[in-house]
Amino acid sequence: MAGTVNRVILVGRLGKDPEVRSLPSGTSVTKFSIATDERFTDKSGEKQERTEWHNIVAWGKLAEICGQYLRKGKLVFIEGSIRTDSWDDKETGQKKYRTEIIAQNMQMLDKKSDDESGGYSGGGGYRKPASSGAPAGPGIEDDDEVPF
Image (cartoon, rainbow, N blue to C red; front, side, top):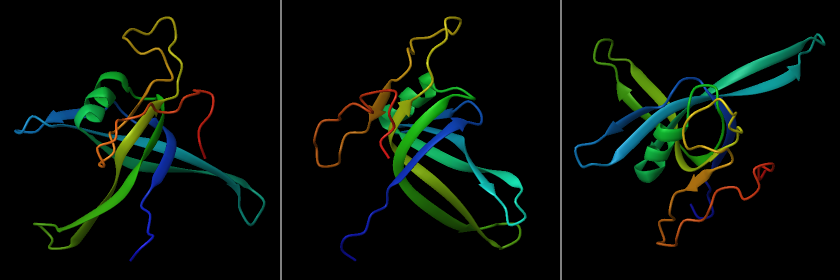
């Protein structure tokens, strides 16, 4: 089907510190989850808030950067594609599903406070090199703007 797009943009807070692994091939993979909030008024006029959790997977250099700089509670911009995997549970035989966002661009949105350690100064980001071989560009240029 021509003209289809699989693109996800999320801005949310990390639920826990990222988990970093290195595959036997030497490739890094980092997994973490972020929460996004939705506020709405229900049919009875009551204000409601719903939190949605998103499983994020980063590979290669982006995985290394995420593992080094991201921490629980930090605000982050993620751009990538959505992928759902399925498998049969070995114990029950039931079909299971897991939906993940494969990160291709990450932008740290929180500012570094004076008491935090590490090399992060806020507003940094990483864009995974395009598969066409084009050089990677910076993330969001202005850390006060998120491109929506």
